[in-house]
Length: 116
Image (tube, rainbow, N blue to C red):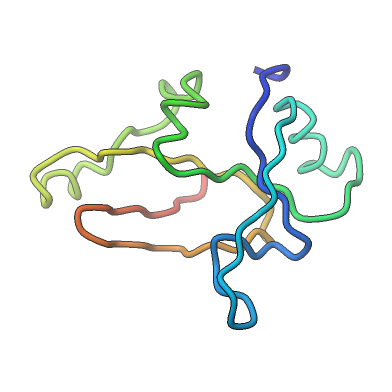
């Protein structure tokens, strides 16, 4: 998976898809090998900005299908409560300075972030 090109969000301060100083801001998107992204995350190389993988529209199944066997595709009690499985399963990976909402719910969408 190291040589696979992935979409990476980059911001100067970690705020993206978030309100920052009265503005809703979006990240710059770059495509890079997953191994290069991990090198930045692990501080093996330095690059200005905050880098993280974050995308919606089921990026786990679309961009990271190799990980499907390693993660739960749903939160069982939530699927039971809503009477259906998720429409999308999204994957986020970044450092602690990458800011996004911890919990979001807007029917029929539900998402939560859990540490790996």
